[in-house]
Length: 144
Image (cartoon, rainbow, N blue to C red; front, top):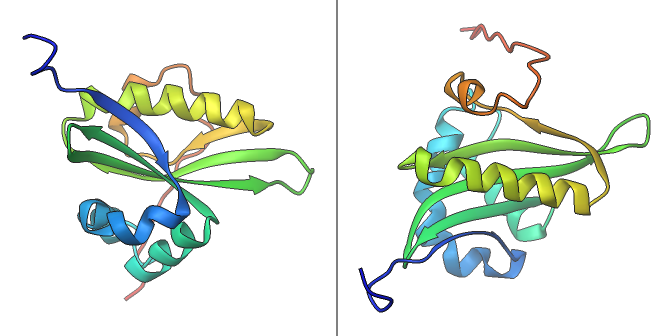
């Protein structure tokens, strides 16, 4: 593959003022995460929090196609320490972006002065990120 046909892979944070324009490219990834949130999130709430800059939207692109979206939020714990929480990740070909995403988010957490970086993820991520300590298990029971 020569330099002109090589596809560039990028994972980066979208500025809040780009959410409106890029929503068509990232919306389906967000909807996928919302559908797995057991009612904790809505498409509108995620959109509003991203647009306001309260939450961060990270995307992985191959050329002009968005393959993955990761949503994070910065928080301040009751102790006063800062934390970064990855609350949603949705995408295709996870093996191509998963490590890049987490390594980038680790650097971001450090640059923000965070003492903790937490991933809320499905069980398969645990096998990949062995440097993370499993501290809790989330159990759900849907009240109907």
